Length: 470
Image 1 (cartoon, helix red, strand yellow):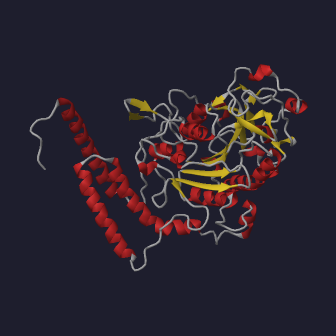
Image 2 (cartoon, rainbow, N blue to C red):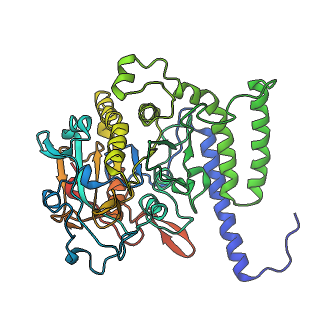
Image 3 (cartoon, rainbow, N blue to C red):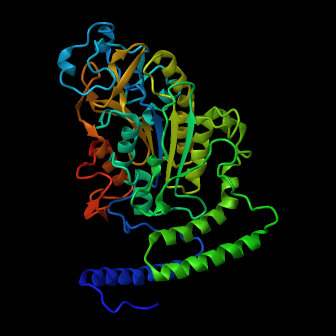
């Protein structure tokens, strides 16, 4: 390779930095090759910033925005006001979605609520199975977000920003902590759909953004083969395939010596992972050994049928095998109209599987270090929109379970009509900071230099919600 005879100061410093980085990278790669066969890739946060309370996250994403007023936030005053004009004092000057400049009428909850468990957690009667595990739940009724449209609200909930190219929460976790398995991706996403309210979900929600692409979420199919083209091609033996991969990786290794490009290392790592997944994924998705009582617990009619119930059972199997971040999207909650039937159908889809997942993890002694997060990208308005409710960002509900979160409690509150979070308000950035804290990460210290700035999941905000931690 011919070296340039003249080089400017800026280029010299840049190339020198790359050269030093390449030496460090080569050292790391060399150390990787000498690790024990069962060693797992380590993240950049080592040692952890704080005690690790959760090793993994199962994020149950209720895509479309379930109404907090028919799930976890009972507002009797709203029920009394049903059908009457909604007080202008609440909404004057506020951003509304499709109800802007419309005549606003209060819409009370159509279902009843009851208190459950020793903590007296109020849960809608639409979720009787969830009520049976009330003592494991921490319900947050004072969440607020900044985005009123679905795609940007999903992006804000996942990446803490609406700007494209920002890493998702799962990618940050994998980058910070590394993987617990080298047989499966560390970040897996699955989707399912209800009868109505099927708001689309884009792949940008599990993007690695400006982080190397090896940290992005991998979508598994809910029906049929979880991963396409995973099997060995006809006429190609496993040994021959191993030889091809070794040669491709050798060539990629030569390329990586010539330039510092993290995507080359990603390519090498993904070839290796894909080879191992040929045996690990079929074993993961083969639920034939799950006893009938376990299938019945989750309400699985046919394993791998694409249902949320089947995906929840598969999530437990992923958690057992060391997957760091598991996201299950259920598209069933965008109820601008016919909210009564829509909420009943959505609740029927998820109530039993979610309760089963919590019970299953607890009896396996895994709930203590698995953080479950349930909720949507925003809530719904206490004002009616025809037979439904519009998008709402000023106050909505989620719940968490396990992973060092205080069980059997309710935190925060909206006002008497469920319009605005007013007590112990939790911003999405606060939620992210708290989740990272439970996994041993200080959200202010997990940063990556990008476009001249120290980027992080929580932007320039975020506080750990210590009152809900054990």
